[in-house]
Length: 70
Image (cartoon, rainbow, N blue to C red; front, top):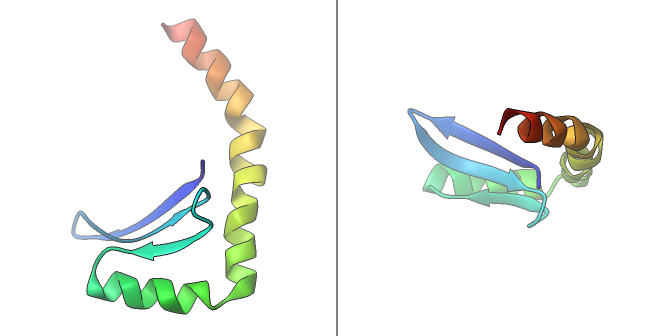
């Protein structure tokens, strides 16, 4: 799962989660941002692609490192 969190002053206001497939707001400001960002199809497709380009590319490396450390 790919998660991109947006925070201010240690308080998360918006998050993109690849399992949900869109931005979710947690504060009044975050909800407004999420609504605006969810209207942008190119931004959503770019964020969804991050799972394949970042997570799935590196998961085997991270998994092997975790097994050798424990």
